[in-house]
Image (cartoon, rainbow, N blue to C red; front, side, top):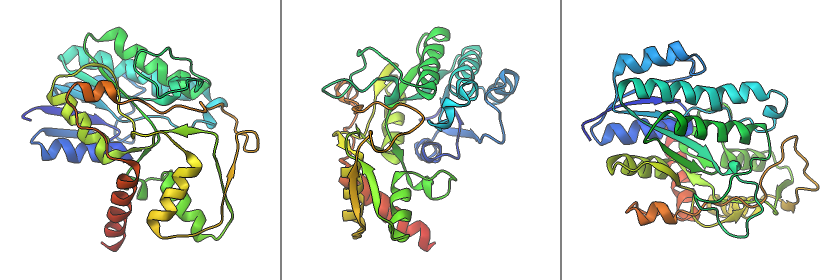
Length: 292
């Protein structure tokens, strides 16, 4: 892939995998962390993109503090909505395709089957609204954006980022010897970052655009996800199921928000690995990283 690729949010769990994946495929990749370029600043984004003149601009940056966003909705809207407008305008100026990542949270979770791309959106909180705004800005300013909706991303980069991921949270709680309570009545499709990065590069190579779902595959509750993590890690902490009613959070979350990958697969993109395979791969990579 002899293309120039600009990646914003290059130090996050997904960003580090995108940097690696596109570099390995021969692209000339330039990445910026949040501390390097403030994507909420239109001039900063325009200058960064113009300095590279890329064919592909990828936005892996996001404000994802779902509960905090309820108290600071404008911060979420700036980072997840207005920033995408900045990236879309800068992409349009240099004729680049924008690849933007969105979320299963644009849905309300009342479906009885995994969500497909044509399902009506209905965000339930400030974070979700801001992510839907980002999708709309990308589509408003560009003819061919690629908007990839995903769910519960986890990758080895979570070892080195401040917020970690669900696996790191579970492993930490197990080390602390506490009783672990995880909601059983919320279902999603957790997504392995290296696999998501690989499928993204495949979609870019094929020239795919529009809204595409790329989630982790089979629906699973967060409780059963925790069970799977501990089984693969060979741990037996005290794990108990709980419910949304018992575990109240400031933000409402969709109760059932797995994503169907059928459209992606119909376009010739390889199916995502099963969650047990992904968790096993994560734990093996994690062990090597900790040993190095």
